[in-house]
Amino acid sequence: MDSNEMLKKMLENLPAKTGKSLAAWKEVLKTKDFKKHSEGVNFLKKEHQVTHGFANTIVTLFREDGQETVDLVQAQYAGKEALYPIYQKVLAVVNKLGNDVTITPKKTSVSVIRKKQFVLIKPATKTRIDLGLKLPDKPVGDRLGNSGPFGTMCTHRVKLSSASEIDEELIAWMKEAYELSV
Image 1 (cartoon, rainbow, N blue to C red):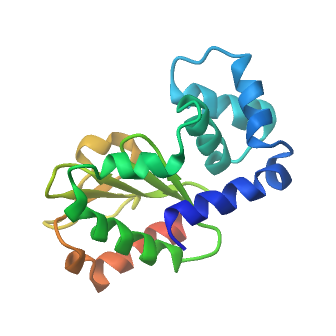
Image 2: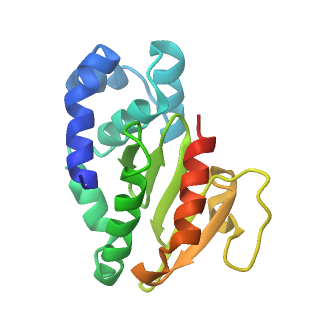
Image 3: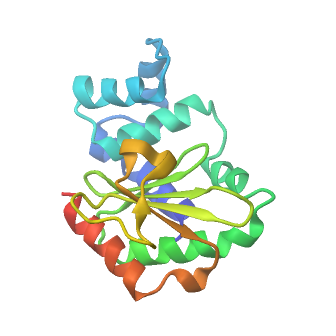
């Protein structure tokens, strides 16, 4: 299942999981004036007990004001099409980790969430994807670098220029990040 299919499934499950359709949530958000994405997400989580993954998706789609989410990922890889196979391979790996993984495209990156975000996929340049990982207490090394521009969203970053770099070592780190995101 690719990210577009996962988003479609998430939106199908939205009413059952949150009590409202996407249109209804957009109406709720229209009554507020949030300056930042995180303010809208925190509002839905605190005031309406929406899980982080659903809250983030609702706010993202609300802020895009009708733009198809598939366009979010396509826009990220416009002019960087050579990186798309890397993105697809990362998705294939994280989708095998468990049925509780949520893929949430944003304007410049894609969050991979369990209960918390554990992977962040960002096409950083025309030749490189930055893969953020949430691995607290894991030492930084040559390949598993510090989080760099991700700040506190991730603890580490791996720079990927080829799908072949998604090897057993990187898959093990993604699995570890998944297991820690409960």
